[in-house]
Length: 360
Image (cartoon, rainbow, N blue to C red; front, side, top):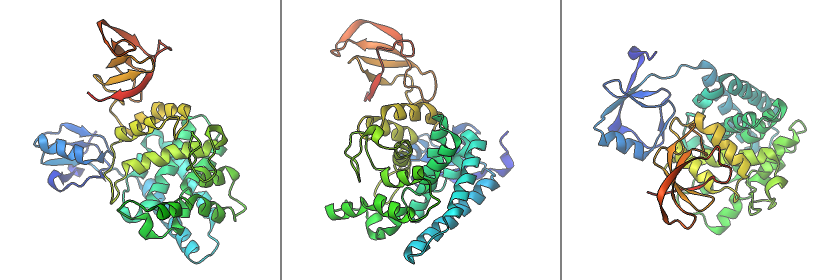
């Protein structure tokens, strides 16, 4: 039950894109608006203004465990940066213990671990991004059915995946304009820098090291540093690369707006068989969408192109992360309108599946 007395007021006029609130939001008439941890994009803010909603209200989440973990993560990241700057050996055991605690938190809180992903701070982007990718990668690996030991190692590698960026000049990392060719080549060195640094420590498992080195390899072999393809890329790196792109898209940066969760998931789907393994993308959409957003990925009325070439309209999704909804077939395989549209449940018809979403 929502505690009215503890509610905080937010003036819509002063909201900035990328803001998140740790509680469900309501209008002044107590009508439900958005779930906790929604990323308030400019589109959402504009929608509130258009509806004449001047103030929204929420009750902040109380979670001392999450607050403690967040502080521990900051301390560890600062110690890593200090060690790199001084060419010293960091305490990797401390990092491993932290990721184990993070893994335990994600397991115990299941679909409520988004509390730990609420920080969006330009100055601490590498830190916050690393925590978020670690959380998402462990959640996804668990949903994928991997054994606990491997899930923990994937979490460790995901948390450390961008450690090499601590060796990249900040003026390049935070540059608002398009990077030059030379600057991009410097950025592309961060997996190797990170691997060389972390590999010096005997207690880091190979699965974690693989993620640091290979998280920018692509399904089609056009990634870096090795140009590996699909299953040549270790499973932890394949999982982390999806989570890496998702969090980067939903995070506001000085040079770009934050995507909504739905926009980010759809962008990942477009990179299937290009950057990402199709099975892993399908499982990310199926398993993670219900956690990351409350609205269906394919709402009723969405037009989709099927793998058969037919155009269809979504009539009913089975679940939030559903890619096989009930659809009405509107055209033949040459995209010519048919006289008698018919209904197909894509969970029952293995000859058809959604290829892409079409603009209306």
